[in-house]
Every structure is written in C-alpha cells, then in structure tokens.
Image (cartoon, rainbow, N blue to C red; front, side, top):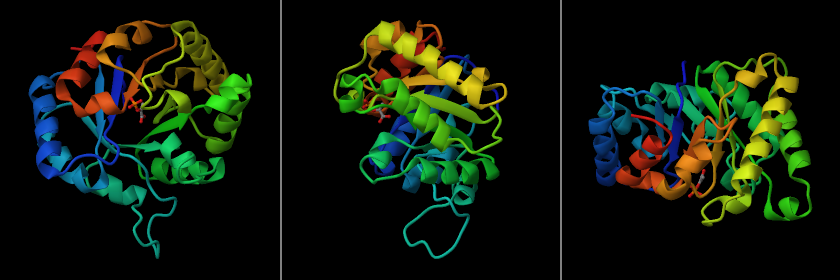
Length: 250
Ligand code: PEP
C-alpha cells in the first residue's frame, strides 16, 4: 500500500454513535474524492463497516484501533485481525498508550498482535512513546528502543508498517515536545528502525500527541516527520481536514 505524504490518521477512540460517525465520515468523504496525501480514520469497531461503506468512493483509509493476537476462538468480547479486514478495515492501530498503560499490554503482546495483523493483510500503525517520568529521567531513547525491539516480530519487513511516536504525556493534554525534540526523536527512531529492519528507514513516521490545526504545519514541516496521528481533533471534520491541509495535503 502506497502512503503518500502527508500521512494523517485520526483515532476516534471510544467516540461515535452511528449518526455522528457517519456524519463525520460523510463530511470528510465530500472533501476527499481525490487525495494528494494519505488520510485515514480509525472508528470504534461498531462503526468500521458502516464508515468503510460511507467512504468507499474515496481514497480514505479505514482502520481499527486494536485487534486480538489470535484469528478466532474462545475470546469473549475480542475482535480478530481477519474480522477487522472482513468488516472493511485496511489498517489497525497497535500498542496505543491507552492500551499499553491503561490495559497493561506488553511489548510481547503487541508483537503477537502485529504478527496477526500483518497475516491478515492489515497496515499496522505501531505506537511507541515514553511516559512523563521516563521523559523527565532522560530515559526516552531507552524506552523507545525497547518498545521497537520488543514490539516488532523478527524478520518483519518495512512494508505495511507505520510507526507513530506518541509521548504518553502529550496525549490529550494539550502539551507537546518542542519542535526540536520531535525532530531529534524522529531521527533517532528512524535510525533504530534501520538497525532493526532491513529497509527500516523507509517506514513512515508519524507524530502523535495534542496535534491541532494550530501546531500541525510546524510539526509536519520537520525532517523525518511523515505525518501525524490525531486523537481529539480528528472528531471534528473541519479541524481534521485543516490538519491534513497544514501538512500540504489536498
Ligand atoms: C491519540 O490518542 O493517539 C492522540 C494523539 O490523542 P490527542 O491528539 O487527543 O492527543
């Protein structure tokens, strides 16, 4: 799957009943008949099929926010990667901090999910990021290296993989690292990926954490930033589209 820059993905989290989800997808679909970049939306499981139908005449990518590591079985309440693909998803977010820290997901579990998602043909958006304590202790690089090492299966290629750098302390807080910190961290992540994966320097890198229309242009102009993963601001079509345009998308 070719991902033209800017790559702008919206994580709706646990938001959206059918009417509002379809209205949001519909507004985006009207603007996105032809896209110069890559625009993706990640609704809750319940809306994937309906949203995928709503945007099917456009290039908008629809994805899930998580998947189980097994394809099927006695796992009450869980959704597998083939199920996501079957409902119209082309991608999945894995290792989001709200799952790593809120639900205790380990790197090993994220790795198993990643393997399952790739086997189902889904593009994987792997989230990594340090906590505030790690940031303040100067342990950011070590945490990111450990997450990259632990979350990526051995022998994986760069195809079908996107990495999102999301500092935990920047998600939903209105706080972001400085532009220089984002630039330097992305450069470091690119080098880590190049070491871990053959061709890993071609993996698109997104920044995520309190991206808004006001700061999107500065962030997406930075070297080694290929786009952004947006939470809160992706729930408003006008803000989400402005962020996409701020990165040069049309
Ligand atoms: C996210 O949840 O991935 C995220 C980046 O959230 P927000 O943009 O609201 O900080």
